[in-house]
Image (cartoon, rainbow, N blue to C red; front, side, top):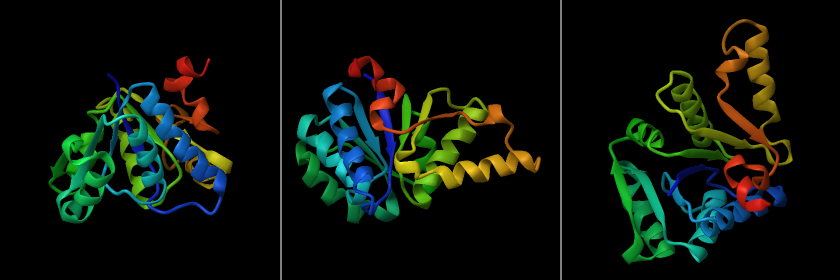
Length: 185
């Protein structure tokens, strides 16, 4: 079974379409029998995705940094059920990030600095061939357009990133995520 790591914000979006897409992703991953992984938190977009996934499947794993474990674990346990709770207490943020490389896919929804950290870490790991799985950024309502403009400017200035250094695919909706395409037809 494929293990899919979901990166998303810990707050709800003001754009309702983003919240709806996060919920839909949870359902699509569950009904298509994927293992759902995230790095703790049950709030915001991450919470929407997780709660919807848990309605349809209990195949969930968490990577929780030790500093957040005591706060996050009880909430996550409540959502997925104490008997189904599977969490790895990581030793700091770096350990949490390294565990992303154990996943078959990374899906990036809109989010804040933690989400960007996970995206950029995944991209760098793929660029250095430490990680070979797919990374998909879901650019709902143009949320990441500013980031993509900055990455283009980095290239234009010759400071970083050749075009082939960007190892992620960009889609506009969760229904366009490549790993889900077989199920959407």
